[in-house]
Image (tube, rainbow, N blue to C red; front, top):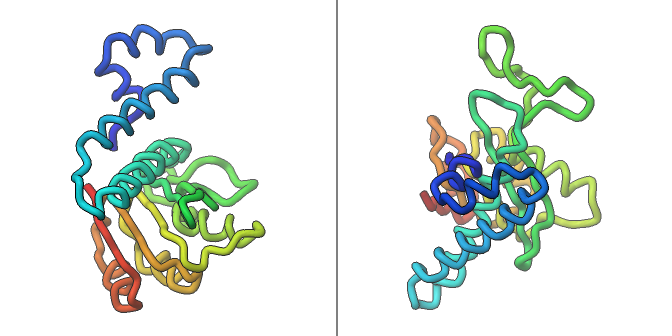
Length: 184
């Protein structure tokens, strides 16, 4: 995953402006708009290109959202989208009220760390929204436990960018009839 600041540093004009903290929100919005315009120009002209473009954009937003994670080993972001509206978001981390340290002294992930998908699903469950019929955008493919939550939440589509080391979550989603798409 590419850090936003590393991406900005590739463009000298943005790099110079990035030094000024009061300009960072403006730079972020401008950079994302330029990124989306670039992706739009690259999109194919067929009927599926609009959905593909939206998928790429939501995955880019999920990647940015992953940067909120305090986890050192792996930062994962997730967005739940329904009718082209973001209804929930999540990133991997400890439960509310716990310390923001995901790994122990041996750099092993603590057993109570929540995955990004689980955070997004539980967040929407506490709201007035429903995840039934939604699409989940996540930066890493779901594990088996998150796959079970996705199925039970009524999510019909999962789009991810990076493959997790174990594929059993993806296999379970496909077995349940959920559309699974990887966009690297």
